[in-house]
Image 1 (cartoon, rainbow, N blue to C red):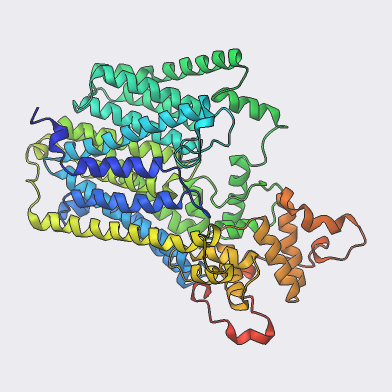
Image 2 (cartoon, helix red, strand yellow):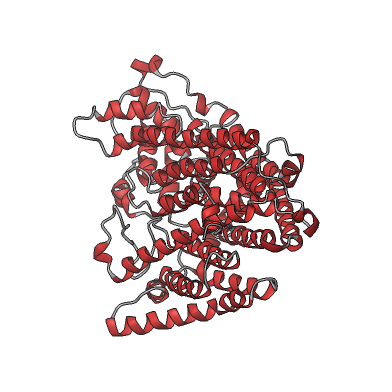
Length: 605
């Protein structure tokens, strides 16, 4: 079959297979983060995908088609840089955000450029096949985590921390579920592009719907309804594809019933049944419910509606503000994209970004309606990928992860670049000339190099938490990690919570709280403030920690069992201390070495 589209895909096919499969299936996760290795690999591999796609930099219509979405990315990137340059956000966090947004812009432009050429359907087919392979592999991991958990060694197959539920190698049931929903959309697209037979389509769909049920994710249940809606609204799909999509809710119900039956005979709760059992064992609604964190977020928006708390500063502002009904988990996102934009950027900027995103979504819908043939199928399937992750973003934050953001941007590019009429489809752009390919090759190579560099940079902080034999002392490793351009905040956490040099410790307390405040860091920070004579701010910080009701803080508050104890953590603060007061703090080293602390550029106001 010399003309089979798989053969015509060229290097785009292996590049897409690697980019979809490796980051989502990489179970090995060195400390201090369970996902950073996956994300560094994703940046490098998706850069490889961009290298295989033409980028017509001089094509005016290309930039016009993606202008709205590029504008939204640019505003968010500008806010991230402003939060560092004008606020107190550490440079490492700002650079991470800007780098990912730049990568998303590149893949957006690459997808739009590829879609405008005659090879658009083949390039999208490569993406879809990569998503399908990743979804099938994720389904296999899900089955092993539920039915053969002893096989989960943590290196090839991740452990599931939720009994009877699948979390995939991404370690989150919602993330696995979103990957599976993408794979289901991809399977239908491949069938319509004649890459997948009807029998194979039904087989892979049944397997992946079963895996969705094993995650017990409510996102998955809603996703079945989304697939049903696609079947009802898209009358240009083949009859077999529409019947399959319409049957997905029934397949989900059958999987639910099968797991309930198997659970009874095996005397264990599986899938959705395991979640219901766990929730039934709790006393009422969980304090960590989405509604609680959303209510807190709305209060923060009301307190600073115009400029927000600053990009990346939600956790700091929320943790150090008083709330009557606070979730007891340490959240670094409010689990809703629109609220996240509003609380961090302020209402005017958030409204502008949201309007641009909605405009891009509307433009994509118009393209999907008007494009015909295979180009139209690509636009409609790509739009389904975008809508799926957009809905997930209303209850989670998948777009903060490179392995979701980058393919979502590429898919959106395929939608926005689709020929908008049958006439323009018949007059598709000719194959990209060498200069156009050089643009894509150079930009993709730069992104791949950036991903590889981030992998090497990450090793500086891995060495702090998982040192190799014969490594330098902890203090030396921490100081080396604090020089990391992208991950210094992880080293700062170690500096703030371990004995070290005055300079390193002071820098740690100046920057670490902007990443994620947890019990250990809040205790160390409160004690540091008390030692420096800032007793009332230390009391305020201790009072906020008490609100989290975390068992790890029991030792810290143990002296308070004696009502006569006068320890600072046992006393109420005498005044209100706003979170910005803490963000502006520059803890100095002990007086004897005060001159040793250099100014921290990431904490400048």
